Length: 231
Image (cartoon, rainbow, N blue to C red):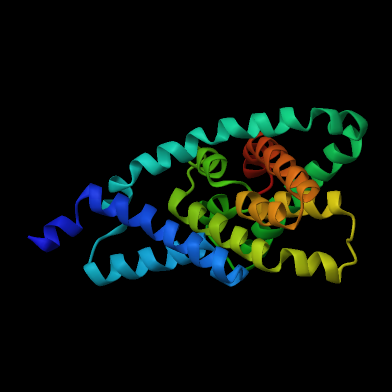
């Protein structure tokens, strides 16, 4: 009977949310990027599913409401753009150029590296939007024939990497301007990078949120063209 309960939708959903809350508490106490709540929840859920013999399809079905809520969060990106409209008016050209460059480099770099190792087309499509927030990434790769599960994992890993090492890499490259640092974190590491940027400072957080929204828009527009004509 206990085993049946552990497989129920209610338990799996509660477990996921509970683990994230515990991870958030640990992160606030220790404040170490390696103990990011998303990373802790990710690892803990994998360990639990493996130990209990629960396959991913069953888990995805049980936590479908979280995927639905994640999709709704895309609407919030429009509000981020609205909040930064005054800042955009004075720097439309550099922001647009940075977004376009970030989109093309983010997609083509991982695609061509993977192509060099002989990766099949479906996987190329799945990993291409690695720097875009999950709701947009999976919405784009689904109609293109990509594997949304692979996309979700890759986007997650990129976000965690950017959150942990992004600030250090920018410092080593001599990037000191808070607006540039924030925009870079949002463009490369989407939502998780933006969470880190908010911790660094208000300016960094605002520009990171703007970059995340613009990168999502640019990738949604250009990825189908890139997928069709360049690989």
